[in-house]
Amino acid sequence: MSNSPPDQNRCHAARMARKKTVIDAAIAAATDERGLLLVVTGNGKGKSTAAFGTVARALGHGMKTGVVQFIKSRTDTGEEAFLGRYAEWHVTGDGFTWDTQSREQDIAAAERGWAIAARMLADSAYQLVVLDELTYLLNYGYLDRDAVLDALAHRPPMQHVIVTGRAAPQDLTDFADTVSEIADVKHAFRAGVKAQPGIDL
Image 1 (cartoon, rainbow, N blue to C red):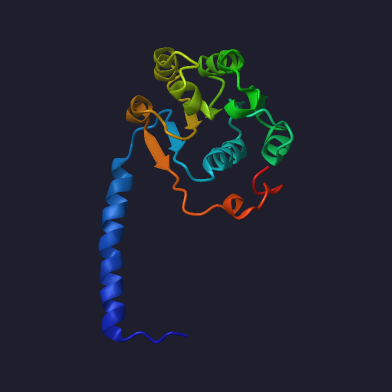
Image 2: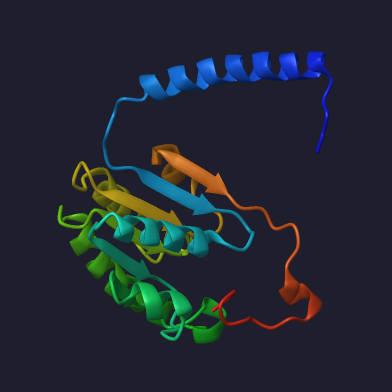
């Protein structure tokens, strides 16, 4: 058990009291309630994982949730096996671009996925929509960026949307309410460790 000097305890208590005043004031000032656009980007691992954690949170509140996974083609992931029981889940990709090696095929898959996403974005029954790996489709020109941004701008007012993927374009991040960037500090794959069920799949 630590025995801090009385002066240190008093300084700590005063500092925390000042901090609480600032935080309480900020919380009291945040009175708006509306649908948010969140972008999770960066080169690090965990962008989709963060989005799916929010899916679990939304489902816990009884919110109708839709997930559209672009690019990815696997349907045996743990997140889909579990969360797909409760959320509407669509895996619409044909695999990573280096797998397909066909721009035409990638564009066709992107358009199929976007048709599902656009339907969800126009429907106020969906309280959370996740557009996983959408940034690639915008950067590669597989979808009309203006049409995508327009659909995001005109979605139902209380609908939350999460967009994931590396290199989120500036116009998307400018429009977003919250942007998080996950850095790549270290990854087991570079040490020769394959994708692990429960961690990567």
